[in-house]
Length: 459
Image (cartoon, rainbow, N blue to C red; front, side, top):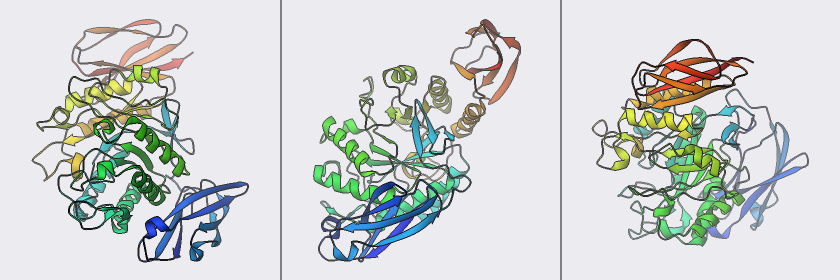
């Protein structure tokens, strides 16, 4: 297998009683002087598995540890080859930005399809994957727990009681399907931003308040199944502050538990809700168990203030959606969405996409995936190219909705800069004549949604 791939151990064990709560299984993986322990899980029908993501090429060995005799003390070894082309490992936070584990820069351009895996619609799920493959998006926010008004065909927990499920047992078929889609995203180069909790029961009564013991057991099971996939991020909750059954201390405990259970230290954050005319109730992202800031807010202009208050990456995962819903969060135009994208990126953050256009398919992209029909994705692709093509020493200034005839930019006096005029809506880049330094006056065509890119050309 390759570095940052998935090595899996399969064992046979007891199926009686409640294997999810009564059986504990892990494996200790050794590489030279290091030992990494990963939890295992029950996969139904007497089958137990341990998954592991090796982070170094070379010879590894393992020994299983269990409270059940037939699962304890199994050993083995395997060789890990260098990572294949396109495999850069998991994404890490680095200052106020992100890099892959091999040092390759990563710039998140995310989108949202909350429960695209829940309805077991193979045609639509494959269409979602094809849409992502042809899109600029390299991160997808998605829920484990159902969020719709009706219970989907499969849910994470076992049982058939219409008034609730058994939160001490899990449905392996649900998780096999979920992880197959996480694997598909990995193969596309898309990060799976896995949302673990939310404040909506989704047709499954009680999931918003299972209790701390059940929350911990659920986290252990999900992390054991998914953490070995290198493209996983953990979002503790969507709109955490709308869940009135949990306190901030409960969310602290959940995030600490995620950090403790995940041997690979995948990215961890939590997403807030907002109400109209209220200031966003942001989580305290300075806490050490959070790796980056996941924010819902309709205004990108505070991005630089958020970065000053907490020097961790800012990802505005929800800034309103291109759409035509009756909800405030789901009816901005593509122009408005792109204005917010450019504002956030120019201020040093990252902005997420969503589409809630109706009439094109039974449910909108943000809910079930499928196809994208808006005008923003191609312009987000253009923005991504602008950012990724930017040379060292270049920076952006976004001019927004203003329609100026000229603008003054402040550049260093000790080096010259090339200036380019970007029309963010028309997706054009036009060089401005000459080289500039110090206080420079740049003529503009007097229309909105323009940006300037300044690139150092000499010292």
